Length: 179
Image (cartoon, rainbow, N blue to C red):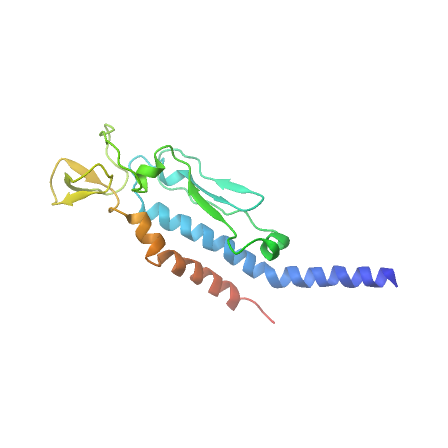
């Protein structure tokens, strides 16, 4: 009798894992999509900031290389069934580990010095208004440049774009569930 109960429990676990697999992959794809958006929307002079994003779950971390160059796609760590079921609502934490991340995210003022090379991303020209990275009076000419608009990060987070990205991948995952 105990053997049958054990077999039944194993079968139930497999069914549960099969049902949750698309949702787990949807969460991972959502995190990857958010990082891709942040890489595309954020400033990119050398590429170090774009390649310093990381995606962390409760048990694993996937980190960008932090190296210069074009943005490198980042794969999210895949959650286990137990992490998906029992972890709080937030499944992944996304952060940028570049030393100057708070400046690139427009969270603090900083004095900027031209690094001596052109940005890898198209830049807008104008005159700097304050010490905040993206605070530029855009005129098409001027001594200063920015590769992302002021408050790009806050706009992405609070403006609803992040919610749309997550909904897109989770809706896609739900459509793939076969009952």
